[in-house]
Image (cartoon, rainbow, N blue to C red; front, side, top):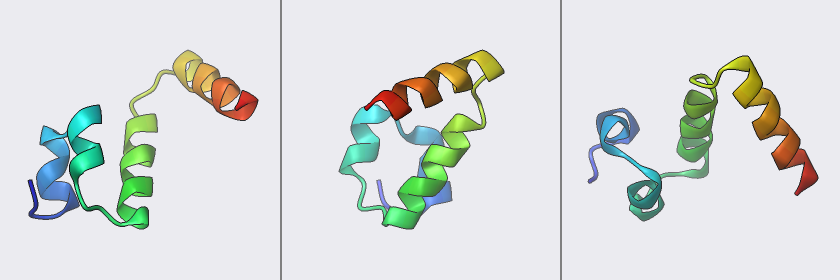
Length: 53
């Protein structure tokens, strides 16, 4: 896809994000943006599952 994180972000899904040559920092930004869309219950469940791993 190329073109940078913010150009590509609207077109990414779980499969295509893995194929993009993003930096660690860009991947962290994508993760934060994704978490920002979670409801409070979803965020709590996500954090609980992450902490169990």
